[in-house]
Figure 1 (cartoon, rainbow, N blue to C red):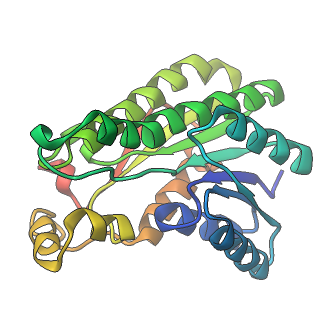
Figure 2 (figure 1 turned 120 degrees about the horizontal axis):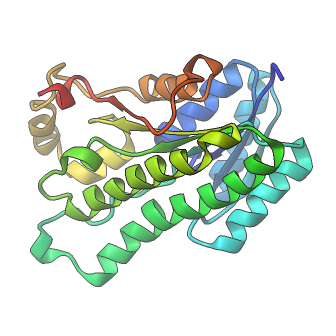
Length: 248
């Protein structure tokens, strides 16, 4: 199985998009899921232009039926899923805890936590049946450090890491590996929305030992590694890619 079948949720933008391009460049077949059809179709064409097979399937990871259909359509088309990257996520509503609401909580957790749960549920269903598989969840260094003005987001990423470790323990004997990558400050549209302006961004970057934001290609490289046979004895791990911030 030199050519792998890779499924990426939240693959239209940011780290998910970079991962899709990285897998395509090494010759893998890539299935990208997301909510925005126009951008998804454009990415499908871009991935095919690289030379490999690619498919976009419009999916809202907050809806169990749509996630089940995504997984089933992928298997019907390509026969299996070798690796899945769960990158769908939102920063939610940044701000103080006292300013959070039930609505801001639900909007963040429905995508970041429920979406990850539903994705893993159906990915594992298929991987158990085929006897192998590999899942990489996208967390955040906020998921194990917390952070001011990001309480709900941080809590959601704590949950993603808990899911990762629990699923790894449940599936380790079935030929399935489940790991996560935890980005630090990474230049994405999400970072721009979270910081709001260049002054706030500069303040956040000043806390990073390497004094710069990460590149999405650097995160994609970590994801490709975790999904590869080179990481074959790793499961239940959270790999931080954060410019040294978690070392302090």
